[in-house]
Image (cartoon, rainbow, N blue to C red; front, side, top):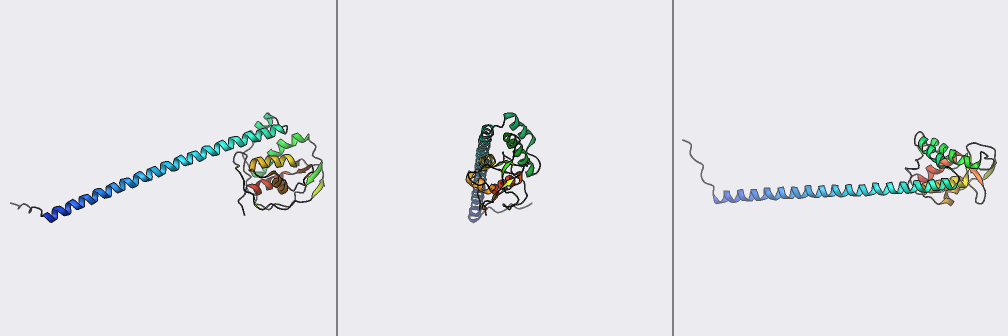
Length: 210
């Protein structure tokens, strides 16, 4: 017959109680940590949701202002809708070409006149030009010195410099004077700028600061 174990001594009972108390304390601390992590995750989710909603409202407001600006310059609602339906895909030059399609009808098909120099100037990588919906307030880096305005011939890619500058300023949040400077336009003159210069200006004004 197996002998029964000896009864626990007072020291053993004390040690067992201490172990149980420490175990409960560890579990409680672990639960508190989990609850804190859950609250932090919920807070981050709320903050992210607020930021997304704020960005969405900003995009809606920017699009509304752009539509008003285009209508002010004589672009019909039908042309705007057609541009939006056809845009948003392809390389950055495609976006600039679409911008030119909106601007050129306002010029009445006649782009003769003064033309901004556009063969040199801004140095930027040939990356994607952000679409209108994706543009936010840009940060200006160093603005290059204006290029001389020269007499230019007829060019289907030429756009009215003032109108292009107003659109780019609305899209990027940049100062209109700085935009005209980056396009190489001379103050007080009615000149034209081609699609390549518009694309370089957008990339320059929306790129990371130096």
